[in-house]
Amino acid sequence: MMPVESWLKPDEVPDLAARATAMIDAALVGSGLTRDTYWSAVRKGYNTPYNDPPRTRAVPAQPNAVASTAAESDPVSVPAAVMAALSAEARAV
Image 1 (cartoon, one colour):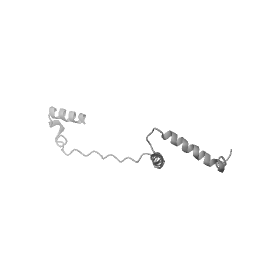
Image 2: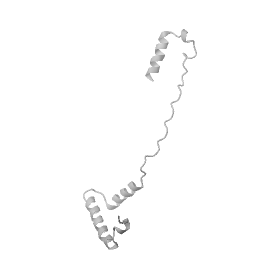
Image 3: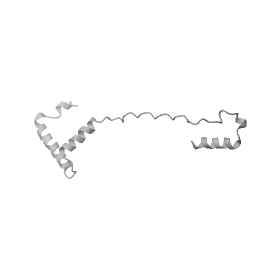
Image 4: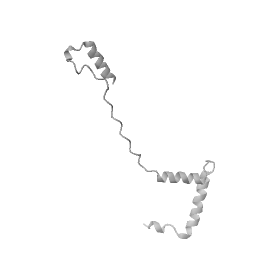
C-alpha cells in the first residue's frame, strides 16, 4: 500500500482545491448560508467534544421536616385509623 503522502502530487493540489471549492459553493446555493457561516459551523462541530458533558449529581431528598408521632408512641396504642392514614401516606410517596 502506498503511503498517504504520495497519494497527491503537488501539481494536482490547485485543481483539487478548485473543485472542492466549487462543490462547497454549489452545496451552499439556495441554503441561505454564506461561506463564513458554513466554515463557522464546521469549526464549531470540529471543536465540540464527542462526549456529553458530565451530569451533575441529583440533590439527595431532604428528610421530612414534620416528625411522625407514630414512631415515638407504642405501636399497640396507635388507633387503626391513624395506622391506615400513615400507610396510605407512605404509599403515596
